[in-house]
Image (cartoon, rainbow, N blue to C red; front, side, top):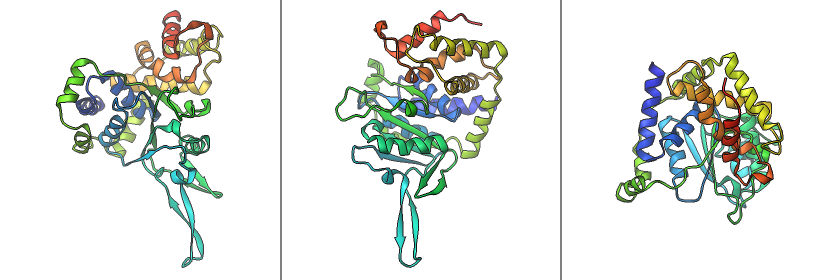
Length: 306
């Protein structure tokens, strides 16, 4: 299968830079193939930014990086209209959001106003400045990184914004062997710069079409509905998933199936991506003492397989 070969070489190249995290790297690739935005949440220094750069490079996409800070204004992101004397008119100067991959570093340090400007771009694939609407390039991905909420000077992302991310992943610390490679090896940034793009935008669009063409049978869709219904039961979470989250879950599972070389979705595909796709949209019921990811896993255990 041609797609399978392409995807395997993407994963192999990414795993040379992000060592010892092959499952997380596969999640990232699934997210982009499913056409979704990706949120990477972790402590500073574990390779979030390197991973985002490596993804953009490997997928052959142009990217821009914006360091989100408390004083970042929406116009710093979207662009600004400037009056030009010669033309006797306002001319729009596009900001860094006009790219194929926007790396939004430390997204939760920006003010809610700037976050909502990014939200419009993510949701509508366009931005509006002073009543004028400009379409963003195709494809358009946001790969955002954020530090855990308990760090100083962070604004929690609102639920509506978290819901726009198809997946949230966390890299965690490397194991001893992987960390030794990092300590002894060459600089990861140099390695990313030396990476070759393995896809072009049309090839990526073709893979994304193949994801959508992956078959989800009736029993599988029933299973997804059972999972979504379980989140709404009040037993596990304060509020259940929206229909949009259910659609996202199916799309992510289709991407997972394509990566595994199948043209149909299996329950295993759903289980492989369910925590990454659901947990950031859910708040566990208080007495559980578990985080959202653990709670999703416990719920999945309790829902019978088709």
